Image 1 (tube, rainbow, N blue to C red):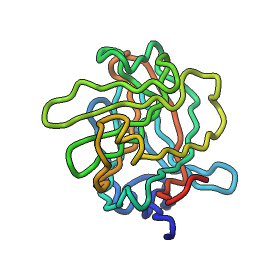
Image 2 (spheres, one colour):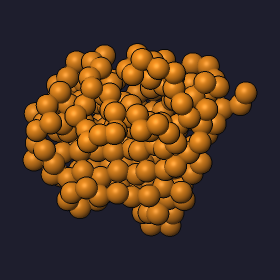
Image 3 (cartoon, helix red, strand yellow):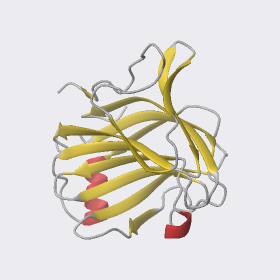
Image 4 (cartoon, helix red, strand yellow):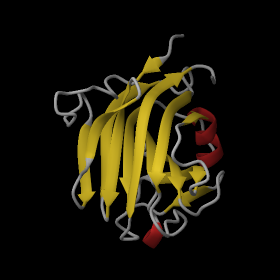
Length: 198
């Protein structure tokens, strides 16, 4: 089965601004600062947050049983000072890739400031949404360079919620710094669903 590339994740416009086809900008607080920019020969997404929370969302329809691996690249140049996803009042990851299933279960994959890599934690959320956060990276040790991520969302759904993964209905790319009143900066590129890990 071929990869399921997420349509139009990266799309350079004349002024490097939005909208990107099919992606919707959501601003929870503060002023959005999202753009496309060049990184070498590649066009990538640039997120910047100062005491703000913003995201890009897109509806998809992916069978996680057939295409269980979600891969992307990210680069963080600034993590929110004092950020720690284990507490609501410091829940400010530098990057979030949220995978929303069609049964109101959500897996956010994050780059945190403090919570250790590998942490898997149920997040408080209004019912009937069920959220379990997975820390992919933490701190600045791997900052300022592109990191390739690949995660088996089907297996992670079983680990997090104890049940097989349904279809993926949406994706969200997000940056936060409003809880800590600080700042963050990150980049995204090359998001794709695959049937095998690469």
